[in-house]
Image (cartoon, rainbow, N blue to C red):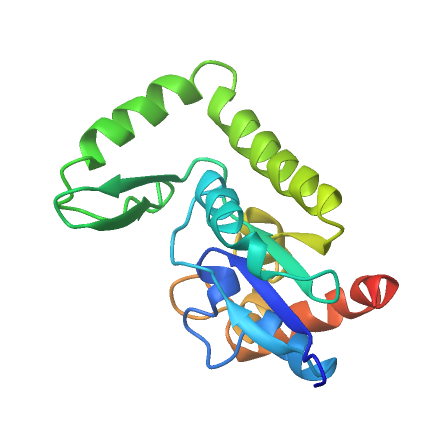
Length: 195
């Protein structure tokens, strides 16, 4: 029996392909004949991305490949017992109105953020460290993609490059199909080093 290699993608709405019909991970999987496995979720926080990976990494073999599409470090995730599911709050855009924890989450972030960016530094460093160490111990191939604010800034979403923004960015600041194709082109050379 021939093993079909898989490309696992973890991330937020940018990696998910929200506002597009295809995402950069799927394009990479098609390019290299991998089966595509999508674990990204809209507004997911970096700690949640690492947690989701830790819950699922035993399915991944050393022949597979993993892409971690990191989100904005101010995002928060929590398990809502009443709803029976994980919720994610995009602090930057203030989504998820009506959830019982939004106000306390905003208060927590605002107060922590004022202390020299503590949450941003923490949510940038430790999730990456967790996934890197888990991948190294288990001989798993992976790469990091700085999606928010990194890739969306390169695509023009943060201003300063209106030509790129109109070409690559959809209405709600996610990459459109052309934006995902551009990210795919940017990542192709890097992924070739692993494969």
